[in-house]
Length: 447
Image 1 (cartoon, helix red, strand yellow):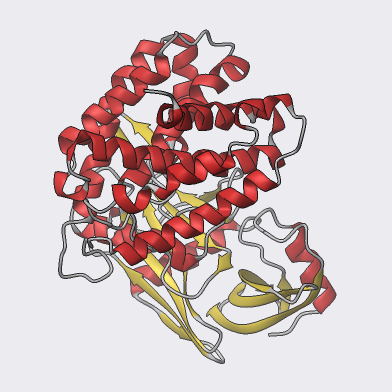
Image 2 (cartoon, helix red, strand yellow):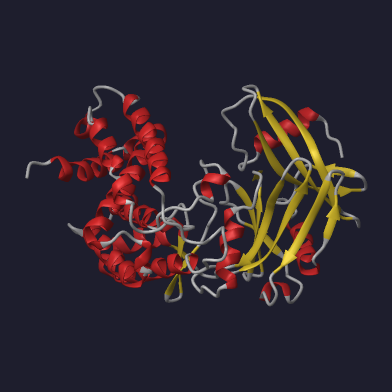
């Protein structure tokens, strides 16, 4: 399969899932391709390398249709009916040979969306980093665009949780992957579509405007669902990818050093004479000292596979319970980092930070009058449900140890948020600033 390089570059740069918009592309080429459908219109898959002027490169998955031998560049969103070919291939367990490898399709036995032929599909317009297609409001196909070598955490965790019957996810139905010369990688997954599921972030905003107590009443259950998630993820000591581990002093020290370096970099680059930053100006060393507590705070408890990017936007309220979604992990981190075992309290810290954001955002976004103390009550209800449910052996011993480690992870999150807001949403800088100030001052206040 060959394409005009300039046309290929121009097409990739126009896609919303293209992640290198600030970089200049020096070269693009098809590394491997496979024909998935031989009847008209044909469907072919291609792995395209995009090399930048800086010398680094990304690898993307493109899907092409052929009409009378003429290729259409990556038409999955424009011709979603072709996505049915991918689902049909999962149903039949198809393996297709490419020039340098193979594309393998697999199914989960008993998945309802693969029992019958699926009807007309629709693309989800809001998807940014991948392409998602919904079939009959029953199943959703997620096509991963930017590829990295190795199994995608979303497939890995969904397969583990589905096999063990964890109910509060959109169950896995099938997947397809590539193995060959360029790399071995997950290409896409099929899973249950949560019909009428309400996005947790949007639900929180709406209910903070209409009835703040109603949303608070849902948070203990969210804590329980999260505790059950971590307990299941830690339930198989015989699977090396999931078996809980007691963190070594060396691994904790390495993690501390990595985060410490990030903190130093962020505080060195803070703009001067910015009133919004006044509460934390010149206090980078205090933040770093707090994070060094990780070596001591983490000597108890265990490291397990976790969600990795846990916040209200990764949840759905469906009927009368919560569903947890999007197990890919933090998109800015490499795949090996996203697969790394961590303390489950890192997920908990991410959700607690989400409560802080929604409590402040509800005012400008929904004209809500958020009751005083709402965030503190939200934290309390979530933590009550979580600590009553999670396997306690996964956590540090005692409430003091738990709170100390939570402080460490919340600080890490808040510093990440500070960098993000300075770069992208300067009006929101006050949210992480307030968190950093709150988290460091108890440790430095006189006794």
